[in-house]
Length: 292
Image: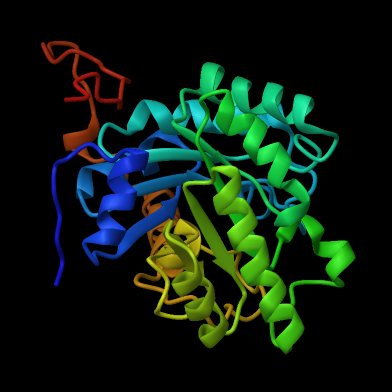
């Protein structure tokens, strides 16, 4: 059953949703308009400005090239478009790996300059003290364990994690360490469903799954994957992705129709042309200043 509320989503509200047994809905966004649409739907609890923008926006093969300044730029746009949902920004590669002090400075910039409500960083026990330092400064932190895109090269590619018994136990230990350090939620990525269920049962804070089965406290997808807005001719869609729309094919059809109408002289038509006597004001502003 879909339960949509107008309540402003905060970190404590996510905990309440888990306690109430209500699934948490999280999607990515990288720009103002997309964020605005997601927030206006009323169905999205968390909007994540993911460093996945490196692959789906910038055209890189991995998320590794994304910089802190780029994350701030995109997060600032998304924050402007959101009133209800909780906005979280990924901490990009090398923004937190150098130490707790550097990580705190980077997290502070994301919150102060981009207006996000929380940050997310990849890694388990190894970064527990870093998480603790950021949380103690008043910045909420979401953890991320399992498949770690920023560790693409170390992991030898995008591979399912936790398939062996000792690996599954290590993920539970990672989750417990992050919870103890003060993380308010943890993303579980690329983990067998049974293992993700064990991790979720072992901790009190919400888990958000992506390729981790149905037993997590909530689910997240990259908005481009959900909308079928993918690079024409690219590889197979990941097994965990469900495409709810075919935006690439629809967009291609629209562009082709536009091209045909221009070449045939059908566009612009009379309804798209200003006359010398027209009293209509020219407006190029497509935004919505009323954010209420």
